Length: 327
Figure 1 (spheres, rainbow, N blue to C red):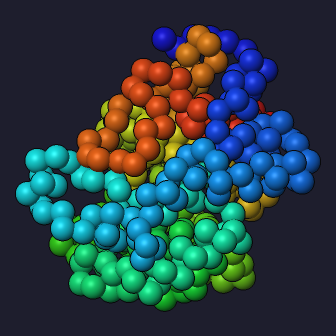
Figure 2 (figure 1 turned 60 degrees about the horizontal axis):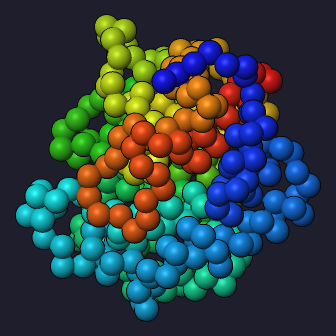
């Protein structure tokens, strides 16, 4: 149950986070306790060999993929997809998780993975090479984020995304099926990719402009509401979940805006207020945030059960609130 408690990270919560996984610890050291860079970088190196990072890497196929496929596992039928739910075990989902975990792009495992995926992985859509992307904005946004993070040249995918921005400022992977309005999900997927790319390869004003327009699409709606009626877009957006997969959540959007503002050296936009308060209201009496739902479908790793305190969500929420409160 949410509770009114003092703002900021409780030391007991920080200690709990530091007792979890290297992927959590290095980000706590960097983002919450302002540790020396050498300290958090040393902890980050352990992601490759310990905890969730090492476990996820252990499931990798000899050809560099996961589950024998790019978007869905090899041999996985659409009938199973409908009956069992979307599987989260294929290559694109594993790479997104490794980026979240903070696997060092310079590590041996990361370099090997990037090379083998480039050689062997093909998109289910039409057999396109993995690092060339495919046709959906959501998928291409995530691929740009992965490629930019792991040091792959994904400029052609970026060019495609820039050409697909809609008149209202956002993106929608239903565009090719006739949609003329952006979606929260697609827009956030693309924004995350463009920010990662801009951080890796700064200097292209077109990317900054595209991000600004996409951000404005979400900010006009205060991250939660319909522009037409002011009603909440989707109650699920307020339910904390990790991993979010392709879906939009308020905590995921706020963490993006935190990262984007830090990249630009900008203050938080006041239109984020309602979203921040919605996040704050989810804080439990013990100072943590809990997973409120799970995505249907197979996954390699469970990062927390529904109703239990989540290290991931607590880390994200505390760094969002810390950023917001400092201004």
